[in-house]
Image 1 (tube, helix red, strand yellow):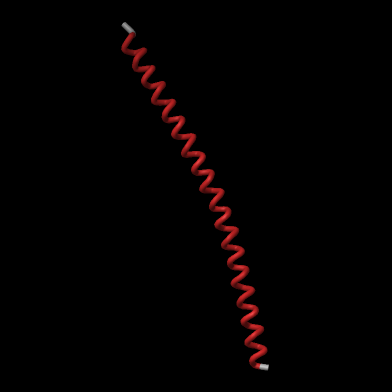
Image 2: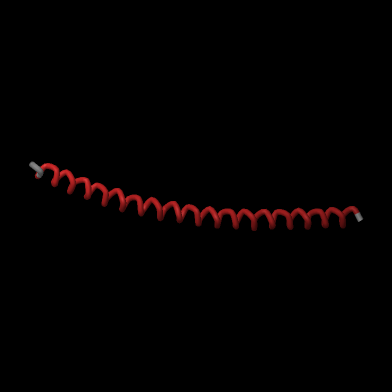
Length: 67
Protein backbone atom coordinates (compact mmCIF):
# COMPACT_ATOMS: atom_id res chain seq x y z
CA UNK A 1 0.00 0.00 0.00
CA UNK A 2 2.71 2.49 0.96
CA UNK A 3 4.83 1.52 -2.03
CA UNK A 4 1.80 1.88 -4.29
CA UNK A 5 1.17 5.37 -2.91
CA UNK A 6 4.82 6.28 -3.54
CA UNK A 7 4.56 5.08 -7.13
CA UNK A 8 1.38 7.12 -7.67
CA UNK A 9 3.09 10.20 -6.24
CA UNK A 10 6.09 9.64 -8.50
CA UNK A 11 3.79 9.28 -11.51
CA UNK A 12 2.04 12.53 -10.56
CA UNK A 13 5.37 14.33 -10.13
CA UNK A 14 6.58 13.11 -13.53
CA UNK A 15 3.35 14.32 -15.11
CA UNK A 16 3.86 17.74 -13.48
CA UNK A 17 7.43 17.94 -14.78
CA UNK A 18 6.20 16.99 -18.26
CA UNK A 19 3.63 19.81 -18.16
CA UNK A 20 6.28 22.28 -17.02
CA UNK A 21 8.52 21.32 -19.94
CA UNK A 22 5.63 21.74 -22.38
CA UNK A 23 4.89 25.21 -21.01
CA UNK A 24 8.58 26.10 -21.11
CA UNK A 25 8.78 24.97 -24.74
CA UNK A 26 5.80 27.16 -25.64
CA UNK A 27 7.40 30.15 -23.91
CA UNK A 28 10.70 29.63 -25.74
CA UNK A 29 8.80 29.41 -29.05
CA UNK A 30 6.94 32.66 -28.34
CA UNK A 31 10.15 34.43 -27.37
CA UNK A 32 11.76 33.18 -30.58
CA UNK A 33 9.00 34.92 -32.55
CA UNK A 34 9.60 38.14 -30.61
CA UNK A 35 13.34 37.92 -31.29
CA UNK A 36 12.65 37.39 -35.01
CA UNK A 37 10.44 40.49 -34.99
CA UNK A 38 13.13 42.54 -33.25
CA UNK A 39 15.71 41.34 -35.77
CA UNK A 40 13.47 42.39 -38.68
CA UNK A 41 12.97 45.84 -37.14
CA UNK A 42 16.72 46.27 -36.64
CA UNK A 43 17.36 45.35 -40.29
CA UNK A 44 14.72 47.86 -41.47
CA UNK A 45 16.24 50.52 -39.22
CA UNK A 46 19.65 49.92 -40.76
CA UNK A 47 18.18 50.50 -44.23
CA UNK A 48 16.35 53.65 -43.11
CA UNK A 49 19.49 55.09 -41.49
CA UNK A 50 21.52 54.37 -44.61
CA UNK A 51 18.89 56.04 -46.81
CA UNK A 52 18.75 58.99 -44.40
CA UNK A 53 22.52 59.42 -44.60
CA UNK A 54 22.34 59.42 -48.39
CA UNK A 55 19.63 62.08 -48.34
CA UNK A 56 21.61 64.21 -45.89
CA UNK A 57 24.67 64.05 -48.14
CA UNK A 58 22.54 65.10 -51.11
CA UNK A 59 21.00 67.96 -49.14
CA UNK A 60 24.46 69.10 -48.07
CA UNK A 61 25.62 69.06 -51.70
CA UNK A 62 22.58 71.09 -52.78
CA UNK A 63 23.15 73.60 -49.97
CA UNK A 64 26.77 74.12 -50.96
CA UNK A 65 25.67 74.79 -54.55
CA UNK A 66 23.19 77.52 -53.54
CA UNK A 67 24.27 81.16 -53.86
